[in-house]
Length: 483
Image 1 (cartoon, helix red, strand yellow):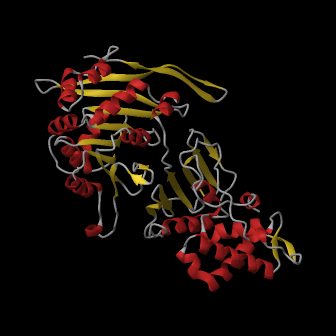
Image 2 (tube, rainbow, N blue to C red):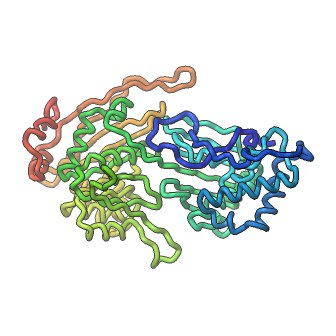
């Protein structure tokens, strides 16, 4: 019997508290005790049946009698009814599985039939960032603290894995088959899934998938400082950039903390400023603020919509065009990944403050990456596009998850435009590594953030033109930051 069926009481797949401290294991809300509230008035006929055969039998029965409930999904009432039907069937048939109570059996059967097998508690738990399915029998979970754990639990077979993944993709209306063996989908507004199946992977693998879970966390400035991500001076500087009209791009690889940094920066924007966010496929930002039940800030959250019908496809480029008609003061493009980079830099050069993220290897490489993306829109000369993107985004932040799994803001760089049109790259802040060693199989990295150069006089001038008081500018430029 698979180890997953020996767990005690599978829990209700609801996020308990997305803002809670990161946990070493998923924290799940306890389920309503349905089957356990009933007492069997007889002993089961056979206590040695294996779970797989029981699952097939119950699944066939429920599918024939109550298939509409399973297909439609539904809320707590539907879940309660389905579990009740399962409990009645196993009671009437005196069915039992060795090592499992009736409650455990009902829960396990339900999650296999209507949810996502043993993955449910990880997908809807807290403290988990990613679930990587390398094969049907090889699953890893990445926690928010950077640790990765290879699970003892796994699917029953390659076919079982494919069936569960298909059930996940059904939520977003996607079909996984031989005609479409590579699929991008979502489970909810904050859970993305990328899937590959045969013939793109081996038959004995079944399916490969990456389930990315974004739990918006109410991180405060002190959390970044205490965690060593950045210093107070760095965070204050970036917040003042957005406050006074300087567009910022946060760069880095996957899981480097780009979106977390960008999300916090958006929380520093005054309630009176109108924010328009654009995200691709799934929501990672949650910026609406309420006080005494009333919304106090001005935020419009939008999502792209992908469709095989080109006329129904709504991409970030189209949403950026719409954003300009909503009178925004700050536009957030969740991630620049294609031709929307051109529209983003146009918006940034025409009086809008733009915050965005991008995949890149360094601060300097970020502007070159923007040029590459802009060329997907218009095939203009590289020098011309470089002039545009450096004017649009004078500040770039580079984040990285180091080998010790800690996320650091590695560098903040300004691109200064000189009077003759030349560009001068100025490193304002930098994380300097003093020691990097391996001890008992663990990486130990020591270093510190340093102020390297000051902001340029041209950037100081832009701050003042955009309304920054002299005393605030003086505070930013004190301690060696003055150009």
